[in-house]
Amino acid sequence: MEALTGALAQVGRATLGALAGMGYAASLLVESLWFTVAGWRIGQPVRWRAVFEQMRQIGVDALPIVSLLAFTVGIMLGIQFIAALGEFGAQSQVVIAVAKSVTREFGALITAILVAGRSGSALAARIGSMSVSQEVDALAVIGIEPVRYLVAPALIAMLVMLPALTIFADAVAIFGAALYSAPALDVTPAAYLLQTMTLLDPGDIGQGLAKSVVFAVLITLIGVSTGFSVSGGAEGVGRATTRAVVLAICWIIIADMIFSFFLNR
Amino acid sequence: MNAVTTLIEVEKLEAWYGKRRILNGVDFRVDAGEIRVIMGGSGSGKSTLLRHMLGLNRPMSGTVKLFGKDIARATEREKLDVRKRIGVSFQGGALLTSLTVGDNVALPLREHTALDESTIRIMSRLKLEVVNLGGFQDLMPAQLSGGMVKRAALARAIVMDPRLLFFDEPSAGLDPVVSAELDELILRLRDALRMTIVVVTHELESAFKIADTITVLDQGDVLMTGSVADVRAADNERIQDLLNRRPREVQVDADEYLRRLTREDG
Image (cartoon, rainbow over all chains, first blue to last red; front, top):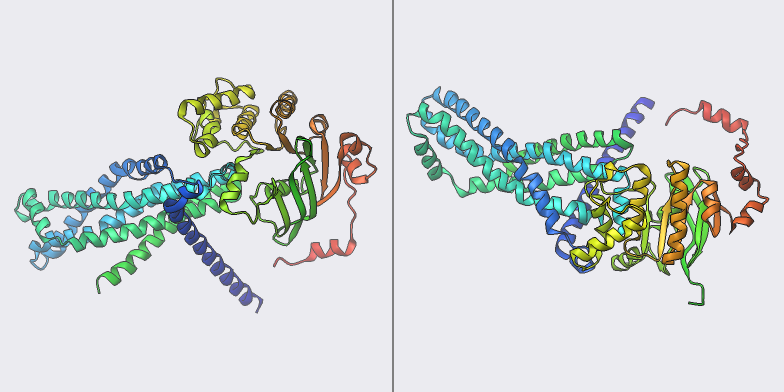
């Protein structure tokens, strides 16, 4: 009996903890949007400099690794589709299969997972170590709202850069697929790309972009909220960083599935 | 100014961490122009009292007023006005590690004033000179020693010329010479800049040197508030324990002791 109630209590505590975490993340979202829109009126403006700095760290610095992975995924999709569709003589469908799967799914997903690993963890580590060393308290008593100074710039930067990186990843992945598949399909890469352009619907790209906006919110909120709730010194910061990445990637994949379901009914 | 103004007014402040009560209805006032030392052993509640005065924790009950404003009930705007008039030097310094020392000191000016960049630079360098860190503005906080970090944090705390300065454990972790220098600096700030200063510390020597008045906290209660001489002469046993570094006499309650040992984890 005791084992059962103990287990139930644990489930209950975990549920409450998760709900509290979500509530906290939601309040951070509302607050940072509010500071962005109306912060300047109460002397708490979101600084453009900080936003640009975050945009550089989240977006520009991620370009090489995003290119590399998107290119690789493009080639991989080319290989798979040529093999799979070739089995029943539908090789000509490779172009549209690659185009749709990259723009609807893989571009957004690969980019989001990469950015979660790079920037979600960096946000958690930065804010976590700042909480531990009382820097967050120091900001507050100087009269700088920590949410305005630390969260809002990251959120805006993420909302701009993740969709931009997604478009970029789409292009690179399709280019990779073109380089691999064009010879197998007996066309030039340029012709492959042209065909992709005619087959693609703006809605396909829109689907990927809509997802990337949601992913941007998830990565930022999970990163900063785990960062702010760090306790227990350097070890706590390490744990929060891992937790931020794992949680963000889980939520990204779950959100992706839900999105795909509703957008493709 | 003839009438003495009260800058800090704490009334019946209670604070809890979970089920543990940290402050049991503390009353506390600080008048303009004095150096008040809050003294107490670890676990006495002095850091918690400080966090409440800074508005970092919300009181469970009771009020904390700074400059006559109840900070738990103030609007964002009012809170910001209060915070522009106070300076805080944290125990570990709490300099932003991503900014240089100079940028750290300039941060409050950049955020709260419309001064141009060269004025801000000069003002922050002036404050660095005040704490004897002239020329160190381009270093990163990680490159400074413990005493320098504390002095840089002090420069950041006074850069807006606050009327009220809080100082958390100025001498903790510093060698005697450096901590004596910090004490001198605190006295100079009061005399030169007419600041009211609240220092939280457990170092007796430094407390007696700088204090105008001392508040002794013990286990969430204010034992006494008085001048250095009053505190030295106090006949309260706990105060004398603290002054003479006597270990507390632990009273063992046999039933409670057995209960703690045999209790199952829940």
